[in-house]
Length: 348
Ligand SMILES: Cc1cc2nc3c(=O)[nH]c(=O)nc-3n(C[C@H](O)[C@H](O)[C@H](O)COP(=O)(O)O)c2cc1C
Image (cartoon, rainbow, N blue to C red; front, top):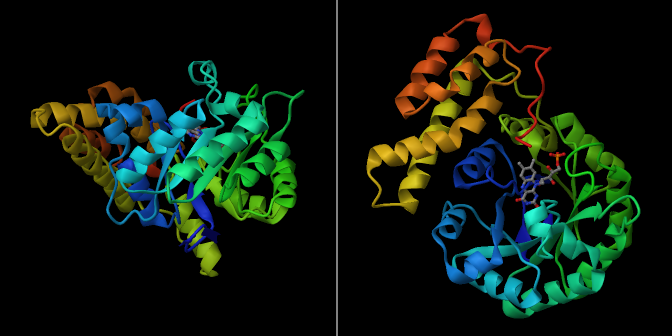
């Protein structure tokens, strides 16, 4: 699987996820076998002005190659200048968000609103291509609403502008994250363009991801909500790709150690952003940031609901460890999977 000059070991990627796909979570997913990851969406205006929040989005592991930064803005020239700033910070791929359904973003003409106008899509990709020497990819939706399903035209426009790949989330903007993603549209886009097509939508399990590839012919699959609390999905997918046996279920010890590693990575991430912040404040901020992940990790386990009731008590890294060990002692049925519990839904 290639995008421009970059070759990826496999075809299962972590999707861009606002508030989720930061450096710590990307590192965990890569460690499990994700072949590629993106930053969350970053404002091109913010990149141009270099805000502190933007800096935190650009924090990356030196081994994260190529580093893909997803940008959003309405105006081609702002996207181009934002892309230049991202490339100066190490980006090796620029992905343009034409999929975000949020009012605040669409209201400015960015995100899914940009995807309403194929001519502007083409102009945006062309402007970024002219500004930076790295591949430009786009992420689009099925369309704006049921009456305006234009993904094939938009994908063609992106290709005409010089995009190196197109990712399609098979829901309309009106659907937000509800209803079903239309995988047949991923197949239609794949038939319509010559560049690699990445499929997204309703990939909850490794089987879903494999089925999406088989049913749509897409070149790679983006795992989004299905990875929240379950980065192990990439281990199963990597094994399937390599023809290895399915990995055994995650052990309680490994499960806890991944969560604790996530806590450590999150604290380090925070401290890199704010070197002047007192260490205890940085730790508290990182644990606050991590709470949603801990809720996702514990979903579907018998002891999950009780653990989640204690979420407000999780202030320091030591609290996380203590409360996890209290609720999930070795050999306890609390760790067992609970078929009645909901699957992780990724925080919408
Ligand atoms: C919490 C959350 C944040 C998201 N943030 C982004 C984002 O920053 N950029 C983007 O292109 N898509 C974003 N998405 C969309 C996902 O990348 C993906 O396309 C979508 O969730 C459909 O896949 P799923 O049904 O398998 O979750 C986000 C989705 C969720 C749930």
